[in-house]
Length: 163
Image (tube, rainbow, N blue to C red):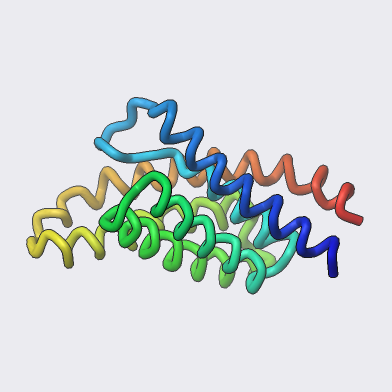
């Protein structure tokens, strides 16, 4: 039990740290405010290694603490919507033997952006945000692919250490 709690703390801390590092060193992407989603490396690893319940807790705590420390109230809603939707899709997709970890990550990237589009539509009250969808889908696929590759290579090493 104490080993599980320790891993829970490590994964949560790393997810928050990855998000903060990403905020400190913004990468020029096609859309203002868009990020690679490096903290999703940690959430996806937790999903693979610890299971859906624990990984969801890690993701929820990451979203809440990151919003309190770095993003503010409005950023919280965008992050929460993206995190919940992408997590649900990744947890379902991970159960399929036909979908690789890279495919799971791509789905997570795409659905994270869909969650944020939904929140933008509600908050801004206009349908014009729908025009951003094609760009966000391409970016979700690309960032999801990159994160999936990182998770694929990290997963085997972490699983060996956790045994």
